[in-house]
Image (cartoon, rainbow, N blue to C red; front, side, top):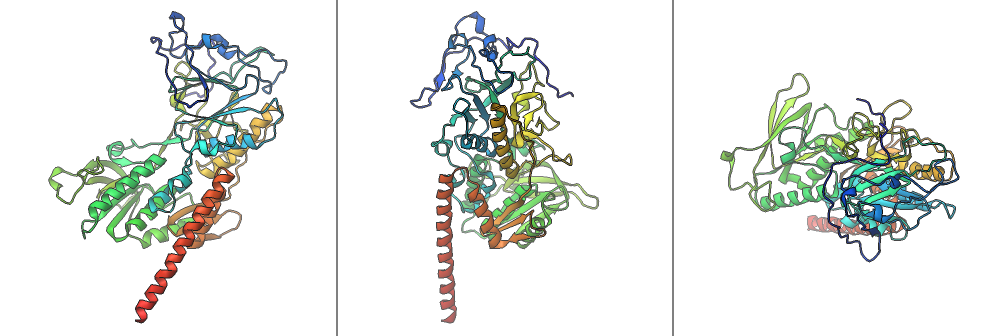
Length: 545
């Protein structure tokens, strides 16, 4: 299947299914007037995605490159949908889709750069959540090490001292126009974005940083019974399930809580270590991996540290197996000691996982579980956002990721950048870069700089990923940190734990949030240390008496 951009036959009119003109929506965005909800009533605007030809025309500019920014001649009266109202009619308009590491840090990078007064862009950040989530520390929510506000601050709080605007909404459709051929000197915009609320955003520059979603519907029963662990909502749901199981188990010697984790990459290992430490002797973690090792892409030091921790705790490893089916246990197995999966405080039914061998010499097995966590597989959001009449306008690879140039620009789209999990960028050896926070951090810096360069008619820089090392949590006071610049060095245990938290504290989005989080973590560490000293003294006195 070809992934080349297909030019539209009629760029001045975008066809779409015909529907009746909807009623004018209301938007609760506070007292500030960010939206202009103007609608055209009549037969001429009945197309769902139809936009007037003026939407893709800008006022004439004397420049020849992408650095000149003319304004659209589109008026509110001509728009079939409510248009986002940019504060300034002349300055460049940058729309960033996705508020994860790539999107938010690109916005903050743009804010930190020095701009000519007439070139400083207006930046709009769009995300479906009202909170930025520091995903590498979601595991600490299960161990109780961090509070939600520390790793999931609101965008409003983070952006309050900047000029970046934030809109909470989901992306429905992308309509880029920067790939269309135009006559020399003919002005243009970058395109438009349709949001689920019905609002249309016209932009000059676009950054795709939408990330990936968990792919949970892999085998029969996985979508119905397994839980992913990629978002704040997922982490809170898992926390709620664990609390429910712990309440039902409290004060009883049996049965133990059984948690099955599918996949033993970084996420699966960190979940297994965190949950096993939390449950201690009251539960068992059953960890399943299709390969015969854990964290196959991790440095040897991290992999050895992870395996040592997993084997020292109440964790059963099923290596060389894949899950073929998840189902409920037969009703005949129901007993008074069971509780429900579908409702937090209802009756729970045991789940059964059918395991099939992926290696010769192994036999199929059946596992029981109270909770199943799925950590393998993800899917890109970009394919479903392509225009139905131009499904290949944004070039994608086989995984649904956007094909980009070394400058992070989408191939064939000079005004569109793609970073993070949305982008398919390869290192000099031709290997796809991993979908990690570290890659997104570095790409955000380059995307911000290259936007500055493009707007100011300067040369763009090719992105070069620098692997600084890898880190993973293995419990409340345990972690493994391998630095790439020191051959063979891996920090483990409390030292690795302290180093990991220090690095992540320094990586928080803003200086203000860094200070708040740093004080909070230091205070908690001091209290925990004092409690440990008191317990040690108490045990010593008790033993001597």
